[in-house]
Amino acid sequence: MRTLVVDDDFRVAGIHAARVARVDGFECVGQVYTAAAAREAIERLNPDLLLLDVHLPDEDGIAMLRSLQAAGTDVDCIVITAAQDLATVKSAMTSGAVYYMVKPFSFDRLRTQLEAYRNWRQELDSASTADQATIDSLYNARSAGVRPAAPAPRLQPTMQKAYDAVRAAGGSHQRR
Image (cartoon, rainbow, N blue to C red; front, side, top):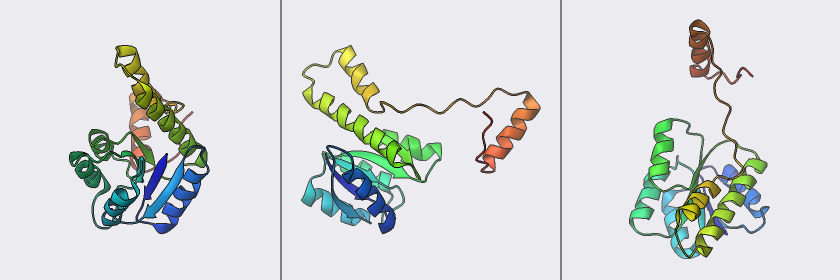
């Protein structure tokens, strides 16, 4: 899988590129730091997959993804960003991103998602019919191996308000 890393921070792009290269079946074909450079690199390198940051200096990454999709550019995208607001997540989903990863993330987390993407892509490319079982399998394979976060605990109303206030203030400790 030919992968292009698009991130405004050259150090972060380098880390992602090195990690991609460590995953069997993946090759990092380039690192770019702006949307304009990404467009040029996509045209020149023809990657299968973009690891695309949302915050680029010259264009919003999701807006760029939307325009690539509208132009019929055949490239998949995993959004990699620090943005955690649901509006951005929804925008990425409706713009064609196959997955969304919040920075920072571990190498194991990236490897798991890249492997799930590879398996999904192979299944998609080899499927000759689209019966419901095949469709279900394709949708499930995109995020295989990724466990959803544990649901928030059910608390008494007063404790729930305190819990919500701590989370809203950026508290990283969760009750287990």
